[in-house]
Length: 305
Image (tube, rainbow, N blue to C red; front, side, top):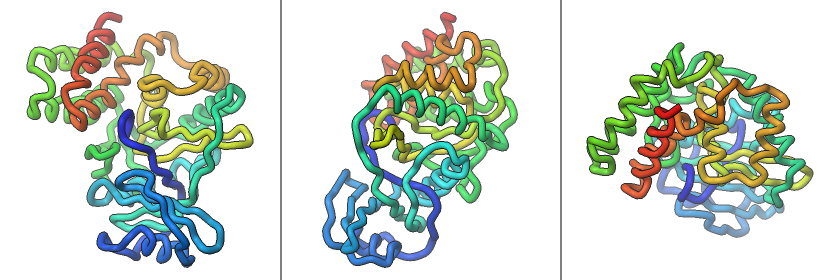
């Protein structure tokens, strides 16, 4: 997910059934595309680029856990269905593997960033049935990176965010010794005050869900492609807060395009830390004590508003 892990390149559509976990990436690519593999290049431990004999390149990704590939494929279909953001096409998937086209990679630019902001606003406006709603066909038990993420629907964002996006990872961080009880108490106070801290009520947005800069690919032709979602219904400010968390090229242009299309509620910039609590806690669970200070800083900043 966000921050340290390398990016893959999944996309939209696809069929299920096919190779099992013992297959190689070349075999998986062949079964889901019908083409012969001519070569392969590892992109990370779980992601491989496979060159096909017909000249196409595909990305083969091994899921991070049971059902992860299915969850990601469902999320990519959901993003693509909005018709506003570019995602790679899915050639196929099963419970263990996902095969997609290879997204083109170019250089960041301000014009592309502003266009991306407008497209992201339109994606969010496509909506979701509820906060926490899984994409159609997506499982309840999904993932954000290598961390399990439950897509439990709710109607009230502050209560849902506290219960299903902050509390589970806070408990795991404390149980694992990553956060001290005194530090956890600061986050618990944020959860108690969430109805007052959350700002104006917003309808459920269609979120990418893991929108750190590594999942934003700058392609040619002024377009941005999105990869590796943890898609669900959520608050639109969460995606924007994730973009800021690890730095996104031309972020101010992205925000200008977004705000010009779908103006953000007053005080949104003051709520960035509140929305970053979720990914920071996930990072603390996945990568350890190094993220504890950022968690506490974000929580204290949210309370100081």
